[in-house]
Length: 484
Image (tube, rainbow, N blue to C red; front, side, top):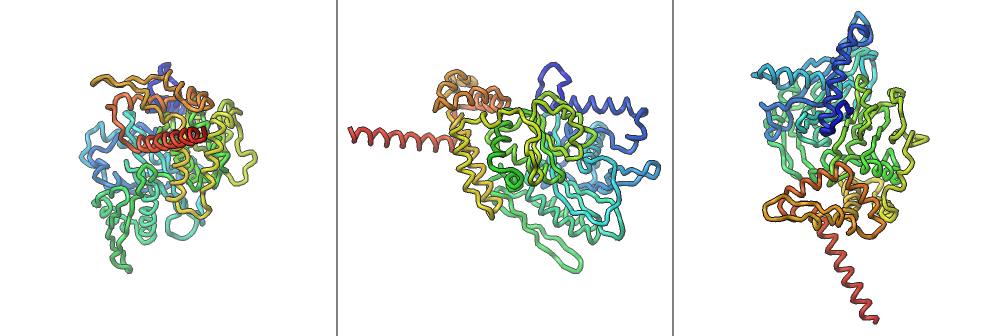
């Protein structure tokens, strides 16, 4: 949500925070020299760090606040500046420090709602699109930004506007439905958004698989009851794999996955903001139970394109018209998500097909064949997540047997014995490389801190797999003994 401006590696969030600080200083220094080019741009602000709204903890609410971002035409230079024209609820009773942090957050939001910059023209037609981004605090806490851009109701040519909801809840599908209701009310009057959002804010956030009903009154329609259902698999509720597999073939997805598990620099190119945000979140979800620990910006704003020059790992979404700003395209993977792209990989390192063990590549492709053309999002999510989870179970699922606990002391990971225990031997080259990644290192650190328990979804799946292997081995031994 990493430029390396420090000789020490303090983690992706701090590196990116440093990058944004340097960018802010650079823009401030150059402001007078480039006044004609930058006068109407928002002050460079980070996708993080952003302060958490302590007055409205997300554990109690669906969201922290909703803002409307409009493009205001500047007569002096003919350009457009994104400005917040509506906010619910208003942020009040803040101290000076908290208010300053919140103002920076709001500036960052305008930046991500209109990442293309300031060159806009009034439109008579515009297909609304929904996308998301992540705002990361320097302490690692995250807030999700959900945005829908549309053409406001009216006559004649006019610029689009954006509706953005900030929440710590990661559930793209749920907020897409909320935006449908917001958009419906906006077509009548912006004043009608308030009572709906107030009702939503007062409603309890449902547990996985549960539904909450929101009552809302619309003139001429009466009282409506909107049902919002949270998916059963909460870790997948922010993900929809459909667009990823629509843009890329199964084999191409494996190449992207291979680069991602090796924590490389990866850029995705597309025209649509919704394509970029959905595909990047889907790629990150393939890593479950591990988590991408480096720079993650699903949509890179124009004024922050310098981030592509960072030497550290990243997952970035870049609009096609900004590809020329990627001056150095070596030592990275650039993926073109457009239909019938040729080549699909604009640049690559060249070893992507050999990173994953050959046998497991074949098993992944076979498992992905279970996808159905007309599968529901839930069905597709189940097939895809199960396939890639199985990959990690077979390669590193034996990790817990190599974390040695002594009394109440933290466990110690036995790296050497862990690598030697990987079976079959053909998997060991991948395992030796994977344990060098930050995602595995932080995963195993968490395991070391926990007591020697076997709780959790991943533990359960590993246990099921190991039990199945034991039964197969026992059956195989019995058959061989019978034949003898």
